[in-house]
Length: 308
Ligand SMILES: [Zn+2]
Ligand SMILES: [Zn+2]
Image (cartoon, rainbow, N blue to C red; front, side, top):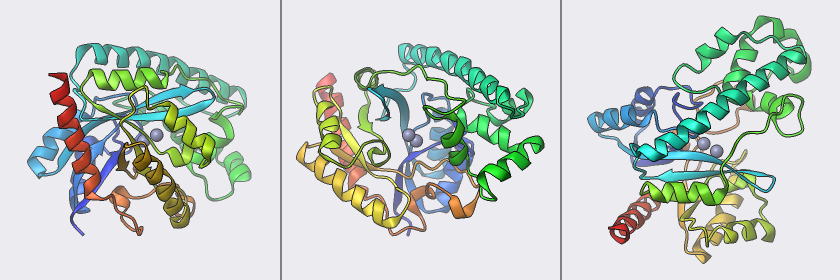
């Protein structure tokens, strides 16, 4: 296989493990020819990724993943083909980054209050080129020797970043701190303003596969939503298949673009409980259809023409 594409991956510019250069180099090794780099609320990895992509012959689609709040739902909106040098947009991202740092420090204090050991220096090492996010905090917590016996007691031998986030950092949990987030409408508008297309990320994780879930997506149509990430890996092959069928049907009926991505972060904590999938869905029966990317590109060209 050497015609793979992956439209949703993360670098160390947000909470991924690999630097943009390493990620693109690995993609090449895996036979991936196009990569959508969509770090959380930052574009700081894109220059490096695009440069390395150009020299390695890998197409890097400049993207972003914006965190939004919709009622009680945390939804992620992906932006594709964005102008990531736009000054006003960079300012907006800077403001959100300041808020994220404030929040991270509150989370750390809460975890310390309930008896976990967290060293600020270790934490900074986990988030060298980015603001501190939940995964960085958890990785620093997992590394700390003094937490090990407690973690083993609570989670057994197989501890993942996701387990710990779920048990302590999510809504209603002891170290939960709300995030300053955009509304879905603002995220879509911001992406459009910088020439990008807005796509709802991994709905299979965030939205119920019911009529109500469909109604949520329908309510984003007047806001200008361009597409839905119909293909993301949801725990098992069967669930993934079901989710793909459900959201593809919705996308087709609403004439939305379809996209697919692994949401690869590069964590390797615990093979047995690994949530997520390798870049390009390698090792699964799935691969992102190349048509998704050609349709995305075509729509983007049309969008640019409408704007000019
Ligand atoms: Zn996401
Ligand atoms: Zn993501």
